[in-house]
Image (tube, rainbow, N blue to C red; front, side, top):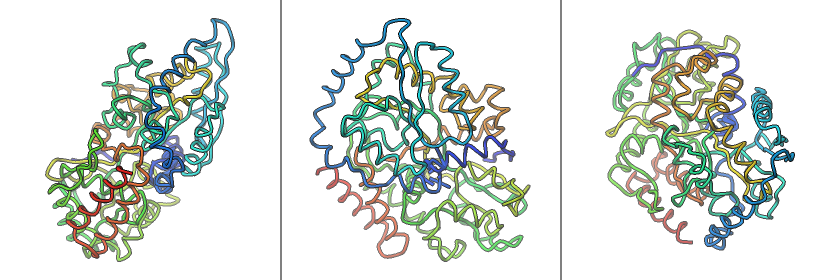
Length: 473
C-alpha cells in the first residue's frame, strides 16, 4: 500500500521534533517528547525508566475505590458560578507555541477558570520520575498533566490519578470517536484513566528512485531489501531500531501484531507464549541476522536510523512520522525528493504499527477536579485537538478531524488516507501497571534472540516465565 509523498509544513517538523522525544525515540514526541525517535529517539528509551512507584503497587491495589470516593467528595467543592479557580497544567517543553493557543482558547470559553502552565523536563524519564515523586507524596500542586501512552495503567494502579468514566458518561463523550488503540492505552481494570490527546505510529520509508512501490508483506520486504541493497549508492536494504532499549520493544510489538500475537491480554493474563509470537520473532530475527542490514544493527536507535537513511545508505527504513519532514530538509537530507512512505509490511494477520503519543490525566489529589475535567475535555475534544494539530502539528486521536480542511492544510500528512489507516492499525504496548519491568524483560530476551544466543522459542518461553513472575510479585 503506497502513501503519496508529501512535504510536511514547518509546523509539522517542529512539532514532531519537539514531540518525538516523548514516545519512544516518539518514542523522541511530546513525541521527540519521545513517541520511540529523536522526543522520539530518546523518549521511549526513557519510557522504560525505573518506576519508583513499583514497590507501592501491591499496597495500593485496594485503594482505587477510596480514590473514587475522594474524587466524589471533591466534586462537591466545585467553585460557584463566577468564582475564579486556578488549575495547573503540566507537560514537557512545547517549542511550537500550541499550548499557549490552547490555554487561551479554553480560558476564553471558561472565564472562571485560569490555567497556569508548568513546564516539565524535556527528558520523558525525568518527567515520569518527578510525577511519581510528587504524586506518591500526595502533592496537589499539579491538577492536569500529559502522560506518555505507557503510563496510565501504572499511575492508575498506584492511585495517582482520577478515574474518568463518570465524567465521560455524564458529558456524553463517545470513545468510539477516537482511534481504538489510543483508548486502549488509557484503559485499565475496565475503567478509563486518561483521555487521548495526540497519537503517533511507525511507518515504512522507501527510496522511490530505487523501487516502484513498497513491499506488502515482511517476506516481500526481505526479498526486495536483498535485491536492491547497493542500488543508487546504498549500502543496506533495511534499517530498524534493534538496540536494547524501548525502541526495540516497539519494533517487536509491530511484528507480534502483524502475526496475531500479544504479550498480555486485557485481564492481565500472560499470552505471549504462542505459535504466533514465535513466528513473529523468527521473522524479526531473519531480518536482523540478514546481510542487508548494517553489521551493527543491534546498536541502532531512531537517530541512527534517520541519520543513515538521510545519508542515502538504505533502500528501506522503519521510523516514526517525524522523519518524513527531515527527508525533505535540504540541510540534512541527501535523498530529498526520492522518499515515500507506507504502512509497515503485513504478516499473517495484516499490518501493525507501534502506537506512540500522549494522553491527558487528572491528579487524584487535585482540589478542583471539575475544572480539571473541563480542561481535559476541551484539550482532548474536537476544538482542542484541532488547535493542537494546526498550531503544533500533532496527529489527532479523533478520526473526524482528518476530514477537516484546516487540519489537512496545516499538515498534508493528515490528508493522506493511508496515514490515517496506519493510525487505525496502531498497536499499544502491554497495558499494565508494571510496564517498565515488562519492557526490561522483553528488551533482554529479544536482544539475546536477535544476537543469536537463544532461539525464538527460548526467548518467548523466557519472557512468559519472567513476565508472569513479575506480575505475581
